[in-house]
Image (cartoon, rainbow, N blue to C red; front, top):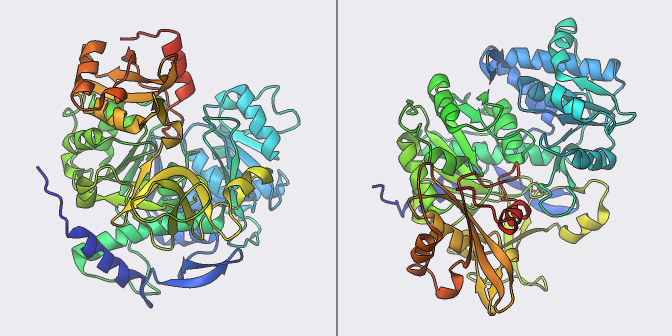
Length: 566
């Protein structure tokens, strides 16, 4: 049993003050950003290409592992340059042009991203799981000059992208060989120019394209690096100074979620470029046994289990078959993660149990808004943590007034890293971007003793005979049951009570559990009106978006169709 260290918050706050003080590597100052005076890191890269150029110091260190492919930083930089030269000279790509990347995770995805950026164009990270209708919407919205994708997805575009040329990723290796040693014409880029387009998950309505500036993509990584430096400072006592470079990381990072998701793209792939991490790609259908096997084979030190990955691995009978002792940093997120699942993850990966953490943001938020980890997360398992450096946060009422600590309202953030807006959607942009530089996150939460708590589905609050029921509370209760893998709770219509509480419960492998047993479990832990009265018990993993959010529309179909998959 690990006892939470309640003094860790004060210790880390002191270390953060040292690192961000004048003269420190993470020195913070005040500058004007898009018309607002904001806190920024004084020492920073000013474009993604500048960050890529700095990878020259990593030379032959391994950057990408993709099956049998092992690509060094030097080889990656040469390939990105060669492809960028092709884009400029053969494809006629000019600064500001959009290029869609539409593929599964593979080494060519990463090279393509950096090549597009180096050519001065804007990569648009298409969701590889989109249906033809969703792809058509994205093509019409961003108007790419070129779609670069894998064979399967380019075939899916047949007849959809009339007039938009495609380039198959299988051709990239040969192209880079032919142009080895060539370099693109440098593009002139400002910090707040759009660096990439990332799409909202589109669980309701059409997906929107978020304009992420260079400043934001770099800030995401820099905030994460500050966290690494804080941990190093606690361990070694060294304080990096201005002009220093962080020592190359020896982290081996496992990527099991799609690169078109902000956590993977910015938090792992772009971060790998800055820190010198080795990025291990594991494309294809998620398989817990394959994940554990890869951790053992590659000596993985860091993994982020987004969405359903955490409960699926914890429920796997492959736990214990492989040596995962190399893992020392473990992240979770993408959706609320119950205290029960957190405990299971610490038990499944004891070498990383002290480091388990999570960060809170959105695609629109740009960089991590709040984070928590280690002993503090054990002490406050339902919190999303403390507000990050260079970020301001307020909880506001429906009229926009700031609320005092403890009162629940909509989360608003102000930082240098928030999005520029939604591509070609000024109305939607205006609805969430305030004139004074604040962004309405859309989530409901409150602050307590400096910690942020998110009721992420408060907008889906269930009203049972005028009594409020939080779906998250009921889900956490169900996931504490030892035979439950994961749960989703939402409202369905009821003639007498207005709403009824409906639960879709996915059981662990080889377990049996009747609805009545689940109901009894809840009745001993929840007020009577919170206990689900409609049930759907399944063995399948619950459907989620690429970012880990539950697909409530699909789950409602399971219920209305009377799905009994157990």
